[in-house]
Image (tube, rainbow over all chains, first blue to last red):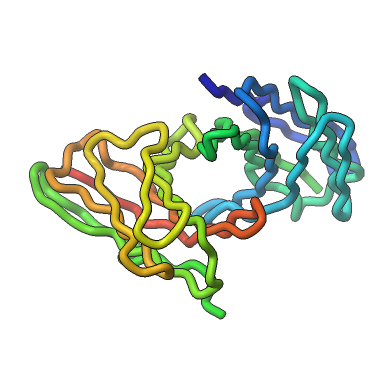
Amino acid sequence: EDQVTQSPEALRLQEGESSSLNCSYTVSGLRGLFWYRQDPGKGPEFLFTLYSAGEEKEKERLKATLTKKESFLHITAPKPEDSATYLCAVQGLNNDMRFGAGTRLTVKP
Amino acid sequence: NAGVTQTPKFRVLKTGQSMTLLCAQDMNHEYMYWYRQDPGMGLRLIHYSVGEGTTAKGEVPDGYNVSRLKKQNFLLGLESAAPSQTSVYFCASSYNHEQFFGPGTRLTVL
């Protein structure tokens, strides 16, 4: 069965303090690994799709990387507006989408 | 473009009542999804559709039914609501693996 585990559950950073979020996964044939951002009371917002091990994608202060067993979301010099819950999801060959429980990030000024 | 819209935004039901949640998208996407989100459990896929007239079960389909009669609409039905179905429900549509989510429906079953 496909599984996604995210760590840590919560992360508190000072503004400018870089860190990484982890997403470990098991899937029967990876179609894609996805990162989303979710603000309170809103639907998730798409950030990245990664398709194969070794792939990296960047957007502003965020960089996502992928290996055969896990993905990292690196946050460089975060700002308070980066505070949100970050969700990781995988899609297997059966088109099923499996999400992790998320990492709740708080960036203090 | 409105993107993905969901109706209603909030609803309170009594155990045993039925209701239908409506999801509409104006982006001409083939794929549509229904999820529920509970505290500490992330998003769980209920049902999805890969095109008009097709539906498939996701991770937690029991107690729900869906229909995709028109490409732009995806309906989620609860025939006999139970307190365990209290949750926030999100609809999404996708193009090229990127999912676009609606604002959610907060459902409480008493």
